[in-house]
Amino acid sequence: MTGPVIAVNGLRCSYGDFEAVRGVDFEVAQGELFALLGTNGAGKTTTMETVEGHRPPAAGTVRVFGMDPWQNRAEVRRQVGIMLQDSGFAGDLTVGETVRLWRSMVSRASDVDTALDALSLGHRRDVAVKRLSGGERRRLDLVLAMLGRPRLLFLDEPTTGLDPESRRATWEVVRGLLAEGTTVLLTTHYLEEAERLAHRLAIMHRGRIAVSGSLVDVLASRQARIDFVLPRPAVLPRLRGSVSADDAGSYRITTRDLQRDLHALLSWADEHGLRLGGLRARNASLEDVFHGVREEDDVREGEVAV
Ligand SMILES: Nc1ncnc2c1ncn2[C@@H]1O[C@H](COP(=O)(O)OP(=O)(O)OP(=O)(O)O)[C@@H](O)[C@H]1O
Image 1 (cartoon, rainbow, N blue to C red):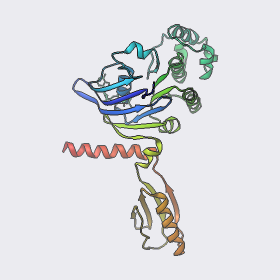
Image 2: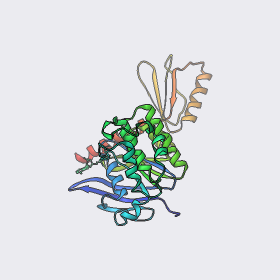
Image 3: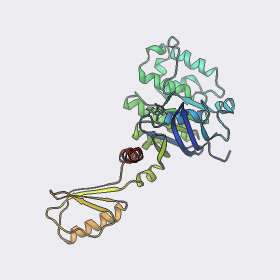
Image 4: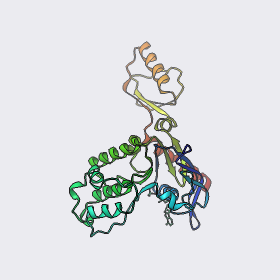
């Protein structure tokens, strides 16, 4: 197959009169991890469930391996693994029994011990599922999702409730799957998770994708900042970015060309024998982009509502 593994065009999804997804487009290539980030209620899970084939779109098209996942559900399902936000396990079965039961239902299943050991659950094999901690259940969810060695894996908030060590172990497992060519669609509230794993990502807000691309592209969509304090008032050199200052002599340059403006500022300070106090230059972080998306969109929605 040469086309994208997932192709979503103009996707709209509604619950009754409420439109939860309002025109979403993205593609995911083979071996790529695409992360859907966003505010609560942005429509990430609804989008993912529609791509999984749980419901038909209200409008637009979804293709998975070139097929409609709603119409060709059985065919698509054979090739995917799904880790839901909350899997319904039979609590009285042990971890080992649960995995063996699941294994009997998938083709191309991997070895039970290998799968359990990869997520540090080997020593919990004989424990009833209902006795597992929340984090262990989450890891069992992932073991089951990847048991059939799927070509495409859906991970809906896979590390929620995990301690930092378990989270890192999960990332390692996901990286291993990517290295083998598995394609992954991930939703997460952890920006660091997306920063570490995603080849490309999208930030959703109120049913739309506000910004998407590689991490570098997404960060470049917002301005960088240079902060410093001047010992005495002075006229700054010509810069590409905009300058703001307060009465205490604290300056902030907001710029799309960090390298050029920083160079101009430092050269100017040298020429004038000025020492820039508390000098700090940084690109936008994913957190800045995230908050910016929410603020800008809220302002726009407010304007529309007036
Ligand atoms: N079964 C449902 N019936 C009615 N409304 C729903 C239903 N499921 C979700 N919604 C609404 O649709 C919107 C999108 O929900 P969705 O769960 O897709 O968002 P999300 O981005 O995954 O949110 P979160 O980060 O909080 O999990 C929300 O406003 C939610 O309240």
